[in-house]
Length: 598
Image 1 (cartoon, rainbow, N blue to C red):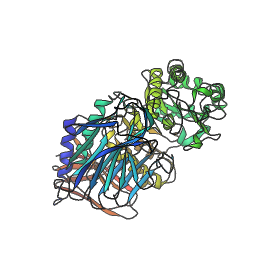
Image 2 (cartoon, rainbow, N blue to C red):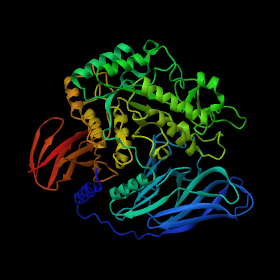
Image 3 (cartoon, rainbow, N blue to C red):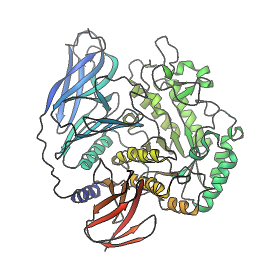
């Protein structure tokens, strides 16, 4: 979406807010205290380290210089400390280091969505603070929104420590040594305020795109994924049966993704395993022969303890203090599939060559035009030693991904379970939520996670809200909720069902999601996410959600007199002027309405 259309839509959304909502200028005490340098050794002298902060409008470019004669190991740099007097019910949103987590709620009651950086991934952070990474937004009641963000991620990751009455903006320098005369750029930082949070996020996306140009492709993929119907035990017959169904009934599902399970061990991606008769390449060839696009799940940065790549190349891996491959379980989540994981070191030249050769084989010889890259977080795993002692884990990941991209060529690359800011400029698509499954609680939570990231879709990459699941025992209303959230995301559409068993009604619902709109909904209220608005070809589409356990009335102001149609049922709601009101919207449901100007 171009910026002019976006601003028109946000203005329309603002005009649709309930009358009387005040948006005052920021008047709080929000004072800035100078930063400080935290050495790895608390006894180290840092008086000769100079922190320079240069502002240009809302953007600053901090640097750290060693003006002395002795090297210093620096743990982190506190760029700023913001002292504030925001009320406890100030709404907040924070990103995390990896994409499977977010922080929402209020300053008084922050809530972790998904798998937390600290609790699950065991990323070190202060015990007395709430930690968010890369992006923080604050919405004090009745006042302007505040956005604080790091707008580059080349060497270091930036974080925010939230304590009572204060926010620290901190750059994690990973205890690297700053040599005499050396200067580190500490990643660009921005502070924005304004009455419309959507405009602030659009401005952030613009700045991120300037520093990390997006490799966007013209069309985001649609397709089918084997995992959510067959798990890691998919068979050749199951895949071929779905291929036949797709070719006959839904050829718009272009990319046929074979997920986890084809490989004999994590890390041995080109080895012949028992799945698919030991010949995954033959299955991919059949996909091409049916006029569809082969797609493959790969987790390039990890290897299992039983893998050949670990046994033959232990020097390729992130090491412990004794120079041995570092087990992931010793510092973070161990992974899945049994046996424990180890992480390949993206700073090692041989690993870079391995990545490029691996994906070149899959792209050129196997014909894959789409890669789902999973477990990318481990490419930026903390707590180990790298082949390049001057590199950070951010650089290790980015160098590894650059090598992957040299091999994938013109194929579509989706990042999943990845470090989100370090992936900027390196992927075409980004999973915007955790794994989906056929349960109401998961439908609801994954919708919230994905829709929180609508501002990224079509700007940084195409969002992937994970597969659409329309078979199973959940109610029709709950499937309407799930399908509407996928529509409102504006991102990728991949079916996760065994399409040989789907009912005609659910198949019709899937058809209505194709092709993807490429345009994410803008919500009237980012906290409730009850009314989302999407402008397509001059028409307004309303996504109305009731995620509660009780019926509720949902109202949405219309910009003009409009004829309203329910997309899922096909029913005509008539010509409506002013405010559209739906009484007794059932719990666990959503309505997708097409509104055409009269």
